[in-house]
Each structure stands twice: as C-alpha cells, then as structure tokens.
Image (spheres, rainbow, N blue to C red):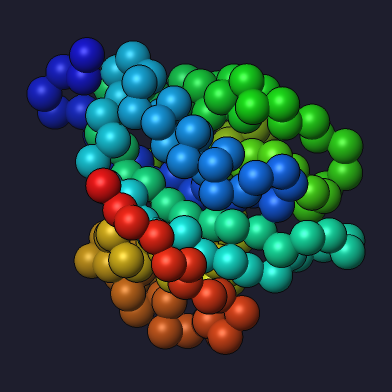
Length: 168
C-alpha cells in the first residue's frame, strides 16, 4: 500500500519481440500490482522504429506511478519485472520482450553508477516524449526546466505512429 505523500514517477515501456501489445498490457497490469506502487495514468501505445541494430519495430508507451519506493528500489523492481517477462540483456539497444525505463522521479536530479534521473537520453527520443507528453505534458523536466510538452516539440516525431486501441 502506498502511503500518502508518495513520489510521482514516470516509466517508459517498450517491446519489439513476441506479441508486443499483449506483453505491454501484461506489464502495465503487473506494475499496477506492485507493493508500494499505484498506477495513476497510462498513455496509448505507439509504433516506432528501433534504435540500434536491425530489428523489428517497437511498441512504446508510458505510465505514471505514485510510489513510496526510493529511486534505486524502484529501478530494482522494474528490472525484476523485466526478468519476469523473460528479458535477456545480450547487446546494447538489441531487441527485447520488455524494456522498462525510469524516466523521471518527482523533480529529482540524480547520477549514480547505476541510475541517472532524469533518464539521460529521454530528451532526444520521440518514442519516449510523445507518449509521456500525452499523460504528463506539464511535468517539468528538472535539468532543462522545460515541460515535457515543450521537449516533444524539439524532436522529430515523424517515426512515432499511434496505434488504435481501447483504453480502460
């Protein structure tokens, strides 16, 4: 159970192997059942071209959470969920069943050997910013001071295609 006063966090989800939509839907469901986490918003799914070696297109989206977990514990929890879904880390930016990235945690700026918040490449990635702007457009990215809505206007979004879907 999340105590009142938990912190807001933004998480990116991606999949480009298997039944991508089913995997992402199951991942959202799994995130909603985590102790000390409450799912507060979710974006639509988007199809995007993969970054890195040749591989299938991704389905991407974002969720917002309220959590009493610390950022390192939240990251560890996200990595454990990836492993539950069969994630294997073989090559950087390689294909994956499920990718969960901690993008933002309240207004925290943090750099450790294992965690950087805000996510170090989120400002360059339309596949992150488009779904994040849908659910958190006014969230101010703490390094630049710009809102997510402002940041999404600064990237090429032509490779991000919304997928038709029924949202709960």
